[in-house]
Image 1: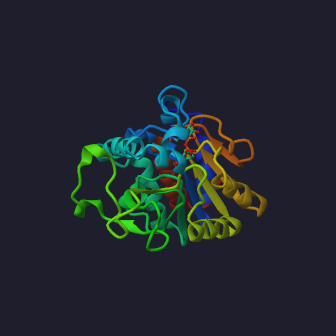
Image 2: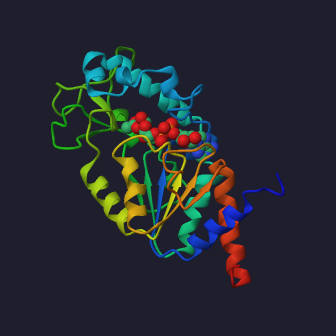
Image 3: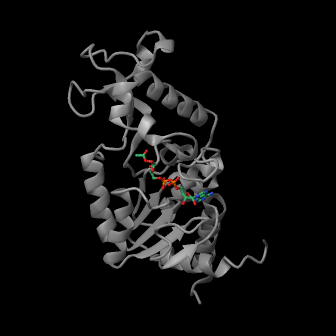
Length: 266
Ligand code: OAD
């Protein structure tokens, strides 16, 4: 792979990024794949290949079987506890040292972007580390720290300590639920005025998040898509780089630095 055919694409992406004044990075499960966290739609290993989202990731499912849903998230928290951010996350955080404005909009709930130093991260789908009252009894969201609660962990989720009525649930967005309003609003606004949008590791299938690259493109942004497979974004992206983000993003960063030190780009 030393004489990679991807090099011209990486150079083009680096040139666009180096000049960016308002960069939006938009990430999905693929950016954490090299950390060992399964994506959703991988045909064999993806979570949705093995589990039915309708039975695990909807409010109806939680109402029907809170213990099943809670246990599934406990399982996913376990996966996360054994995982670490990868070179792709680190490279994205380093863009901030080089560019005036970098905002990361993520569909991921693993918190890895923040962990490695990305300072402005919009979480569209919540965060696995947080929990809230299913009824949001004290307002949206009523966060609950379960580490402070004592309950029989074998029996499923604890009751909310504020209302003592509703169960505690993970603070993530499920199917049939709205995205957090302020986060979505800001994400749309930033995508609309971005000059470059770097899309990483998303199938681009899930609405409304998948509209963000469309807004960016429509408003003249250069859209770059990094994904080993063709996604819904690749087709209209200005630059599609087919490769894993843990390898491609550090190469883009290196190419940006090389460009900068050699002055003119060709
Ligand atoms: P998907 O599982 O739909 O897509 C993951 C994408 O990552 C695919 O396009 C893969 O080709 C790509 N990919 C795989 N390995 C990669 C690598 N090493 N580097 C870069 N890309 C790689 O995941 P999302 O698009 O994030 O929603 O899914 C969107 C939403 O659907 C999720 O946020 C989740 C799910 O249901 C909620 O939970 C609300």
